[in-house]
Image (cartoon, rainbow, N blue to C red; front, side):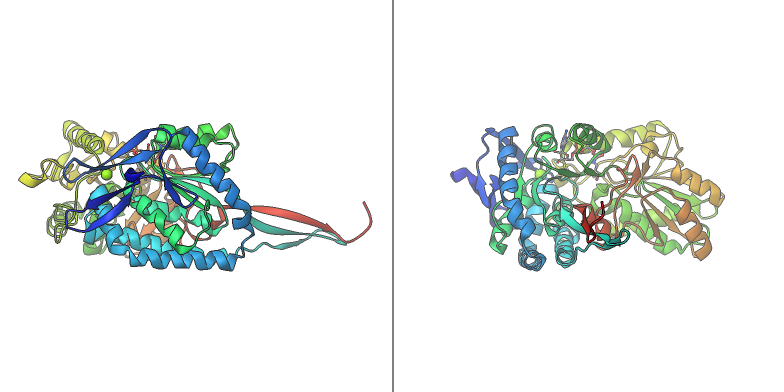
Amino acid sequence: MSDLFVEITCPNGQSYKQPTGLFINNEFVAATSGEFVESINPATGKPICKVHAAGVEDIDKAVKAAKAAFPAWKQMDGCERRDLLLKLAALVERDRDILGALEANDSGKPKDSNAVYDVDEVVALLKYVAGWADKLEGSVIPAGPNKFAYTIREPIGVVGCIIPFNYPLAMFGWKLTALAAGNCAIFKSAEQTPLSVLYFAQLFKEAGFPPGVAQVVSGFGRVAGDALVKHPDVQKIAFTGSTATGRVIQKVAADYLKPVTLECGGKTALLVFDDADLEQAVKWTAFGIFYNMGQICTGSSRAYVHESIYEKFLQELKAHVIAEYPQGLPFEDGVVVGPQVSKAQYDKILNYIQSGKDQGARVVLGGKVPDRKDLQDGYFIEPTIFADVKQDFKIVEEEIFGPVISIAKFNTDEEAVSLANDSIYALGAALFTKDITRAHLVAQQLESGMVWINSNNDSDVRIPFGGNKMSGNETRELGKFGIEAFTVAKAIHVNLGNKL
Ligand code: NAI
Ligand code: MG
């Protein structure tokens, strides 16, 4: 079983032991499928290692482990679950640097300006949901003379969590909420980024989690992901990823009446009104589309700017991005923009850029791959600003999932709202104004699940996150809504009288 761990040295010289098996019942095991996922370093296009890919039988094994562990985990005092989650948070904090490094190596996120913050996100989540583990309460409902009912919040059972490539650790982290609520889980990483969550899996055991509570598997969506959705003993699916895959999952899950939490694509609109603090608007706009190489479901890929400040905004945004978003290798000092996660994403984004040019958008910045010689083998694309776009341009309608923003002007507030809402997606929206009445009126008219006033892409584990329309199915992660989504209410009727 020597292939269950490999020694990996990151480009910055940090070495560690990378698990490659499937983490089931607190042990790494080989997949019976005989299949592997090859993990690629997107900064060089070179393979890092191969990890075992779960097949249908492997998923069944993982589900059986979770099912066996569930009764005891459900019965466990919430205080004990809380303490285990806090212990886990402490171990993640201890391993922050290595988790950041291996994530940077596998996903291309710049280590110091990006990857380590994903680790912090997991820590914040764990501490937050640990606090819920001992506070899941129900209520008492009077039901006439001598009768009442009380409700308890129970865990659902075995849940399948399907993770995307853009935030491998953070999206896995959000779904750890399932455990706090008393569920057992199988976490499946994305094909492009399997390494960080496999490393993380060891920490469950070290923290003292009972075997079977948390399984972590690598595998292909159409095999391992599909097997999770179809498994009759998996009672809920929590998914983050593309709208196309979300639709497939909801359809397949319908056969089992299985609840699904879907966090899918987005096309966040950002509105800059004439009275906005321009410096703030510029700063947050750039952050919302160029951080994480634009691989953000809430990425502010559309901006609408009042015509009186339109050209000024474009020039200031361009200057800000040149100054504050240097591109380079993930382990290079001062780098903020790394490569896209994969060749497929790189090709897809470059096609969108070409279509923007073909449809007549003005290139204000970027629009190409960088010139630097040492970046040519990786999947690097320059931060790209398009201006003068029209609503029917492909780059305005579709989710690009890359460092590309499309900007147009507006005149009235009504026009701004109508442009923002003119999308099949409704995940996030942002607006910049100093007028408090306008801010709240516009926020209420926007159709998205989240609105940022004078900020953009801020998230906090206490605040519900999720989208409407084609961005999801109106389910939410994080906050009180997020933990409740991993529980089910049971009503217990009590009769103290003797009448029928
Ligand atoms: P995807 O949505 O297919 O993959 C997300 C996860 O779902 C992965 O773990 C994958 O293995 C799994 N999966 C795929 N097919 C499945 C199935 N039939 N049943 C169960 N699980 C399945 O996304 P992909 O192919 O990696 O990226 C394609 C596009 O999706 C991107 O270009 C981007 O536009 C969008 N995307 C959006 C995300 C968001 O947060 N809005 C996240 C990831 C991708
Ligand atoms: Mg990779």
